Structure formats: C-alpha cells, structure tokens
Length: 415
Image (cartoon, rainbow, N blue to C red; front, side, top):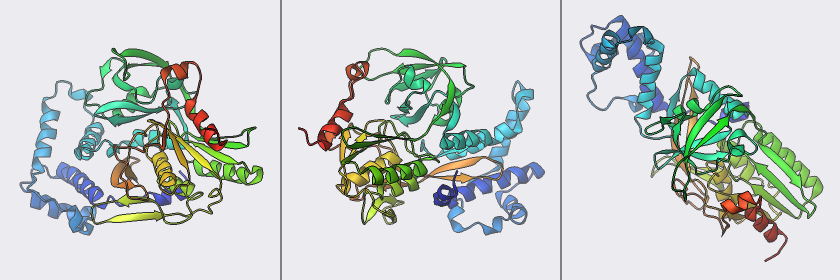
C-alpha cells in the first residue's frame, strides 16, 4: 500500500476501536483473575496495565454488561466440547472479535485475522490466487459484483449480479462475504464449484472453476484510429493512480477528440484515487461528500490539474460498477463533465476505514455514507445512466458491445 493511500484512510473508528481494546484487555485480564466478582474490579485492575485510562467517553459502555458471562461461555465451551483437543484459544479469540464486529449488522464492517488481512492487502496490490471475482452482499445473498476480465471466473461464464447459493456444496445462507472469499480462494490449479442462480433463469447451475494466479494491471488504454481514447479501469488499487497519470500524459501528447472511461465491472477500491481521478475533469467544488450523520458532513474538493476538463467524455457503467467507480461516475454526471452510458450501478454508497492492529489483524469499518456533489445518496440505489443501454446474453454470445458502441456514436456525433 503506498504512503499516499495509507495517509488517506481515516482512523476515525475511535469509538469502535476503543471498545475492541476494552474487550481485549478484559480477555487478558480475566485469564489472570477469572474469579473476579465484579465488572468494576476488572476495570480498575486493567486500567493501569493496559493504558485504558486514555479511554474517552465515546468508548463508554452504555448498558449493564456483565463480562463474566463471556468467560462463563468460554470456560463452558473449553470444559464440555466433545473434541477439546481441537479447540484453539487464538481461533476462539479471533472468532469472538469477528462476532463483536459483525454484531453491528453492516456487511462492509468486519474483523480480519492476520491471514485474512494479508489476503486483503494482496487484493489491493493486485496479485493473489483465486478465481478473479469481486464479491458483495446484496439482498442478504452473496453476489458477484464483478468478474475480472480474462480471469478464471469470467472465462467460466460468471457475470455481475450472479448469486452464489453454495460453495463446494456448502450453502451460503448466513455466510459473510469474508468467509465466502476465504472458501473460494485457494492455490492455483485447484478447483472450486459455485452453485449460481442468475436472474431470468429458472434453476441454479454449478460452475466448476480452476483457480489461477490473479495479477491485475488495473488500467488499460487504447488510442483508437477514430481519434477516441479508451481508458478501462478494473479497480482502484495500488497501481491505479500512477497508471492513470500515465494515461493522462499520453492524452496530452496524442490529443484525442474524445475519451471513453470504462468503469464496468469495477468493484472500487481507494477513495482518494477516485477523488483525484475525478479531479482531472471537475474544475471546482466537491467531488464527493462524506455523510457521517445528519449534522456532520465532509466535502472532498477537486484536487487535480483538470487536464481533461475540455475533452468530451463518456463513462461506461453497469451493475458491476461499485464504490469508488460510482464516485467517479456520480461526480462527472453531476458536474456535467461526462455522459453516463450503460446500466444502473451496484449501489455501494458507503466508505470504509481500514485499521491495522498490532498482531497483523485489522478491522474494516464503515465510517460514512457518500453523496454525489449535488447531495444524492447512492447507497443501495446506484448511479442511473444518462442513456441506458442493456447488455443482453445474446450480445455477449455474439461478442457485441452495444454500450461501447453507444459511447462511440455519442463522441463521433452519430445519432
């Protein structure tokens, strides 16, 4: 992760982190003094040792919580579980933390153990082993947000919006996105079978996919013979901003008559990259607005050199466009810097902060929802294109791209 991106992620989840610290302190403290009879005594014992005197009022527990109940459950499990030898204290502890964070009921707020944290870092770096598909939770069902182009999932025929009912025969009901990712991931040349339900079809279908090494260069460009410049962005990862700047410089040299920014099947990524990218078109004012509450908002103003502001632009989106890609599309739509073509986007209008913990684990916390420059909330609604063009199964089979063709027609001034 670059220093630029590290700097951006706000460590604003103080209240949640403090509660987590409190929980961890009690865990260690109760090991030393399991016979403590009162919540108050535990607090006093641990304040000095763990530095908890620094806790502020935001972390205060507002209801009568008896932490002895946690240890009663812990000890009952350790004493009575049939396969005691299979119980691992570290696994139990991380499981408890996952349950704590999951209790907020937000699919994008979750705890990751060290292994999962490393996998997440690999995702952002653009290199990992798996099937090459971004997953999300939509209508409480594990859903493919976007299959990455030329990766195993896409080659097997999976599409954005496909619902995963089972992984290797295990139902995904009540499964978290993080757990689904863990089960789908695996060494290259091994196989995973996904039971898929697709809207418009009557029955589910099994797809057996051979995993591979997923190495994704997030930005691809093409200077077309008709004078149009195509920029395809698959995700907002560690390499995206640098590659996009190379594209901007190339545009300055080649001077195309128009730009097509293809954000289809782009699941998102770094927010600051989305803001900086939008700023190459948006001259003034906010690019995106963070809404923390009804009374607290934060506007991210344009920051770029606006080198692309005078070049006619079309942005392509579909239901696989989510998060950071929706920020860019929404910003350019509201400021009338581009025409949006395609299908309504996914609708992930929330912002997460990644907080790294000392043992290599981490928490990803939803800290705000985002609004377009005009104040429109995108969460669960998505970006509605200016010109809707549906990509049908027949189009895909015939290797036709009516959405791209519409963009070409607009920029070539064809009806």
